[in-house]
Length: 489
Image 1 (spheres, rainbow, N blue to C red):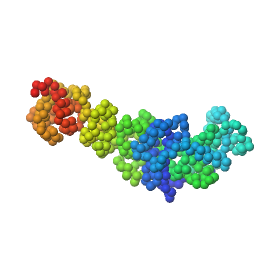
Image 2: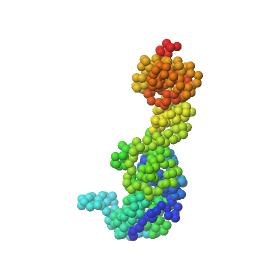
Image 3: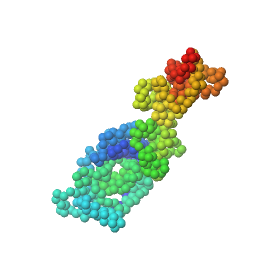
Image 4: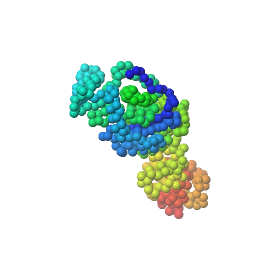
């Protein structure tokens, strides 16, 4: 094969078509989500098309639950395909048809070597401390030499001379000597196609112009070009795609990303960690790509600014703390009713079935100031819907000394006569009380917060009083003032 290259540059004259092609053997990994994002953005930036393909040829490991999880995760991030997804296994006949054409044209061959023979040859190479490279005696055999009723696989015939170069949009030019390419299997002995064949055929039939994927697929690109160029010689119209192999994501310590770094499925970032899709979108975008010093980037800006040639060659480091900080920004910018919709199910699941969305939405402006995720918001909102008697944290209990309970009784008496239950009126009333008692406001606010929320942290104490309302606030204060309230009465 002569030296060849996929054209560099963004799109050329042909309309851009990208694809994300996960295998449904588990959840949508966060690294896969970033690959989908880069494909989506590249297509959007160039006014092209972004497609989805489920590579379900591994029937033993592919599951409906995994397929559903992938679609669910992509939908949550706003990365649905522009057309109905393609399912690779359903196209097996088409893949086999291409294998037959390669076989007929002498670009592939039947290989009758048994698994035992292959194992022996691998062992021999290992014993001789040399890399194993198959040199099958069936490579040049013709049909007259084929055994009857004996299983075989179909292997492709890469050229043995020359070199192949890929002008990768991220990695730059990469060259491989053709003699290093193996006679890999494209059709198994049961007649089913391998991944390597199916990918090439599907990309061509789907009109994919740009293959954007992890750099662990670089070696696959050279093998897939063998099939592409052989088919182009047979039929024409099998053009090389433009390749862009993006570096994998590493943990904050520089090691390959694993579960200990937080390499969870996208569903876990949503459900367990309580993150917002726009925050995850923004964070994944900045993993290996940037636009100046911009940290907060909207979807519209991302589409305008993104191009794959600006992706870094080096691995990106995944930092959970940075993601959570970014999520805190998006929480504070989000609409209160939107956040209430997301937090309400968490409260119901936590044992508060009577949680009220309207009250939750009113409280959100105060709750989201300190929160970094939806779990923080739900935890912070519990006091709104807790039933009396409140469960006290250890720190809150320590605040409720006899002296503090006496002050709560006085606060109860004072606030019972407050005609206007507003933020301004309550603040003026309690500040005046603190001044009369020659106390700092905190001496009143701290036990009051414990009585109203069962905690030592909460939104501003006057906001808490307003959100709970007159009757509930006074009832909670009375419950903690106890006998002191009765004596006052």
